[in-house]
Every structure is written in C-alpha cells, then in structure tokens.
Image (cartoon, rainbow, N blue to C red):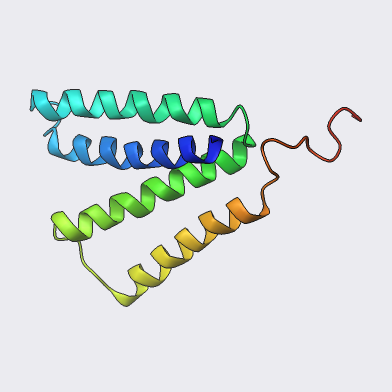
Amino acid sequence: MAWVYLLVAGIFEVGFATSLKLSENFSNWLYTVSFFVCAAISFGLLVVATKHIPLGTAYAVWTGIGAFGTALVGILFFGDPITVGRIVFLVLLIGSVIGLKLVSPDPKKPAPLEGVL
C-alpha cells in the first residue's frame, strides 16, 4: 500500500507544480488554494510512504513521478517543446522509477540486516 501512497503523492506533486504556474505568482486565488491543497496532500502521502519505503528511494520515486508528470503536462497543455532528446530522457526517468520499485525491498518484509546492527 505504501507504493500506492507514493504514486498518488507523485500525482499530487504534478498538481501542485501545475497549480503553481497557473496561480500567477499567487495572485489567482483558485490556483493558489489548489497549490496548497495539492502540496499538503503530496507531502502528507510522502510522509506516510516513507514509513515503509526507504527515504532515498521514496524521495527519488516521488520526484521522478512529479518531474515526468509535470513535463508531460507542460508538453500537452503549455506548449513545451517535444524533442527526441526530451522524450528519451523522460522515458529513462520513468524506467529509473520502475527500476527503483523493482530493486527495493518489500515494505512488509524486514530489511536483511534489520535488528542485527
């Protein structure tokens, strides 16, 4: 379940980054409120996820999802350029996030040396 929380936290990171742009330096109250709500949910879910997923892994996955999603929003809705290089590195970013998930220990199982050190 921790990985689901982390995924949703990353999605809300995209929400707060997008809301930040649309808030027009916090002068548009609707997007300003959206920014703070999305940020609070995103950080809150990240905190919950780090109770079961190593901090470095959780943070890397959270920022990776946020960076990928925000870049995608920029391309789809804000006219950010689409280049082969950008697509290649965005795919590599998601591949890295998936790789971290695959090599991370199961949050339900104790770490191999837990309790020994």
